[in-house]
Image (cartoon, rainbow, N blue to C red; front, side, top):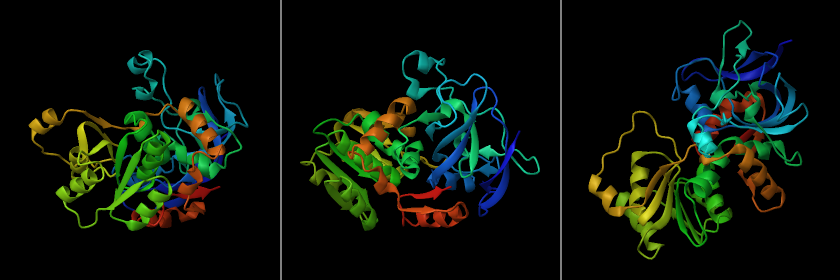
Length: 364
């Protein structure tokens, strides 16, 4: 029998979100209903509200979540009712060309629940990133549920569902940061700060954090940055020179762009050492373009990468990172700036937009 719960919905482009009654169907084959305990407020949710992802309104927002499996559908064997899980938006298929080549973190056929959650009048909802977790309960594909140690706090565990995993993975998985490397991170919001933490976790000798907000730089330094650069007022050449000054005049081995704008990507490109790596983890908008001399790409060598979800494999990475946190080796709790109620999401968007928080987390 279907259930009715409360959820945060973006009904139309740019309009403030509202609390609506949501109908959750019983799980079908391969699906699970999860009682959500915590869900982080991520920039991606704001992008959905603003129509920056697509125009398939209304959206059931929220995707960076943890909770307990309530029920499962036919054929589900990997999770069971009562399991504590982090929700992920990369439920790998196991059969596509990436999976068959042993690279499931690139899975080209990730899947979501087949059934639709709806508003009370029957209007079908588009769940953000196939999850829709700003709700008391949500319906997902069972493969979107990753079991982790239930000793961790839900508001901490859920962070791995998106932003923190994206940043950590950009450094560890995509950037392949190694012992002794120099790393620069441009943009120290939640994702960029997680990249700082990931770089230190991977053994980087020098981690340089760049931002125009001194508050963010102070937090980045607390969490592992060895040097900071307040780039407010610096032009392109000034940013590049500042990084080079801290790296013996050469540039960093790995530069991570956690902003995702043409100007920050150019800064990353020229602030890296010869044969160095650029990782783009900040998400550009569709209208952004880039014009640069092709010869510079050839002459500088190295790798230019994008990092989607930190190139993570949830079944491998989530349990490991939670274990590191419980051992006191990964300060995930420092990313939680505040906990809020379901009806405070709109206000949390404003705080996030103004850089006042790393993460606001809804507790249910």
